[in-house]
Image (cartoon, rainbow, N blue to C red; front, side):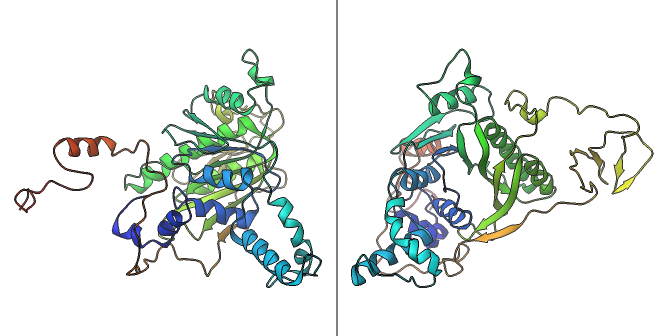
Length: 395
């Protein structure tokens, strides 16, 4: 989290420090969970591109410590207050909640307890400060050697180095990724690099997800983003795009929420051969081969999954039964978070009696660390220049 004037007036930036989160991005995962119930029945999670650890912190506090946030925390609070007034055996009716949920609400105390056999592994190239119950790995998610390290971290007792493929087969319930490149301001370049980062996260997720698992990742919405949606739809039953309220509306970022992992028949995941990218699709017989050019058939014989666009690019797609390859599939787009919550694009006035809080966890290895060390060595201090006779050097 930065310290610019805009950051100080960002409600989620200040709220994150007040509530003990490492970064304001924690609210994005909380709002996604509030909308899609991501953590239901989840005990084994992999957090990719985890540093500085705000999403891992959410996992630790919800899955390991059993805490509740958002609407679930509000309902739990209402139940406890009404139990204190009417007694434990009272027929509770919660405000703005269905009656069926209200009758089951007293049992929520049991679900708030820490879950059993929880295993959370966080991976990032940057070092990350430790968290309770979290196994951290400093590795590259694009390198094939990361998968054995991940499998060993998930099941250290049963992992067999001689035969890692049989040590743990699809052991993970949920894979999340909040990774993004260092933006350059060149939107086309940033969108491309982000799509490749999402592609790397997806291929790693395919290696460890169990059938029916979930995958959540950040995505930049730009030109041809529908191709990424279609590729995700090949291996997941449901693909939706969500925009949390804590994510600035001025940003092109969004999050893909994929549920119901269903690998194609005969598919074997591998980072060395990601999603079959190292080989061309087999050519069909002449009777089955057609080419689609701008949505119309031509006489050229090409594989049926090859689609040639107006700009000359060719896209390999595997059409499903009863699908029209000329149609564009658009996933549902959902807004997450209460409309009465803070607006992430607004700047709120600071109260006069405010107290400046330090970050919960300062960056362990920020990219500007070397610049700060050089400034300090030359006599300045973090963000400040040395004063000469009461004036700055530029005066």
